Image 1 (cartoon, rainbow, N blue to C red):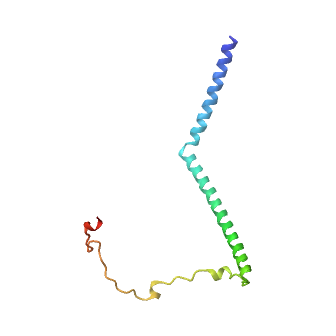
Image 2 (image 1 turned 90 degrees about the vertical axis):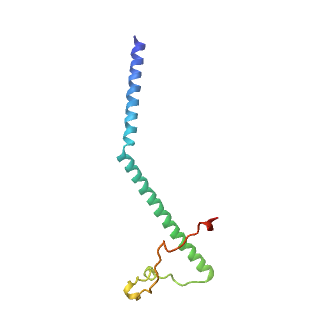
Image 3 (image 1 turned 30 degrees about the horizontal axis):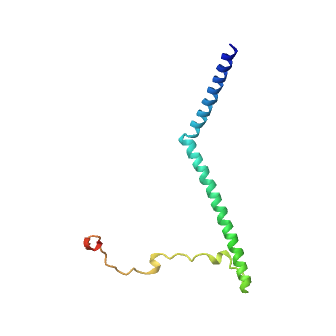
Length: 116
């Protein structure tokens, strides 16, 4: 009698454990959970990429300073505002565009024998 009770209890406990394990896994595989996991991974990857870019920039500046010192160049680096790209010009400021003949894809002949 005691053996049957023990195995019944052990089986019930195993069933409860397996059911909770399966339910937990099913919740992890819902579309909302998968989307949240993907978003978390993307944010984590973005942070790693940003840290990598900052490390590259810091090492680049350090190496430029070392090379400048080795070559005897002691000129200070230009400020960030001097390194900006020039402003773009509107098409009206650039003047009229020269007329170019327009061709259609159908006006070009294609010889299939050239491919062989």
